[in-house]
Length: 406
Image (cartoon, rainbow, N blue to C red; front, side):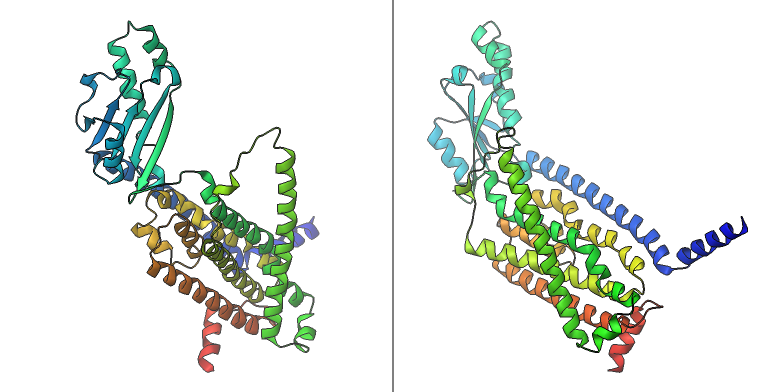
């Protein structure tokens, strides 16, 4: 029994005496709380945004060709318009917030047309219920008509056209295919690579191979080689997974029909180039930091503990998604566009919804490039200091002291 207790005590103290153990205990809950706070704040801001837009509605035009809408239901900010073309033109020029068109054959087709201003992705459906309720409330005032009563309980279809800056907005899902694929690729690369990026150096330190390797190649050559090689491993795993997923999707289309209009996919050279740049730039920044942290850790197991933190940092932009959809050009969107761990994906999303000015696009490219260079710098310095340390971790004090001594 004493032997078991001694072994247990040794194992217990070996773990709890390591600073990395306590760092993980503190950092992980803080990150979870931060993510929950960001998510909650984003939801609150979206609600405020929608409420503000509803309050700012001051001119909605009604074109009733069916004769069903009761005049008593049309009260400010709703006004009667004389024709469809006039109402559409008023919306297109921004003089009206929306126009509801009730066609002559609405009883048979059960279709209402809506023309509206596109204020944000989150608010595109803000008039849907209002357009339906207006005709339903009118039907209740003349409930003796059986055809109208049938329309009241029917599923009314909405044919919606949105305008922004005088141009019709493409509402199809396909316009987001390129950024969605880019974001998916980024997450998969991080998930595949986090474990071996962190352990690539610490594993060799632990089995004493690093001394032999450094006698053959220079530290800078080794770190570059590791980054390129491990990125290649991640890409290989990604390609294999995407091929498997593609096969599954093709095989299951008969069971779960997936309709994608590939002609609507915005495959412009500029959009593809930016998507590739932000995806690769974000991954290189994160992977260089992971390799550097792995080099600073004396043991393989200690390096592996940080994989959770890096995966959480990689998904951080998702928690800003709601507020980005509501206000892609707002203050918060601009701030997180230039924050190291969020910049690549936030800039990728904002560019896909045309929320980046030319100046912001240039600043974004410069910022991501700078973060990649900074990541490489820290990876090199941590590797130089920590590659031969097998008993202790490298502190930031030692890192900056070495730089100062130079």
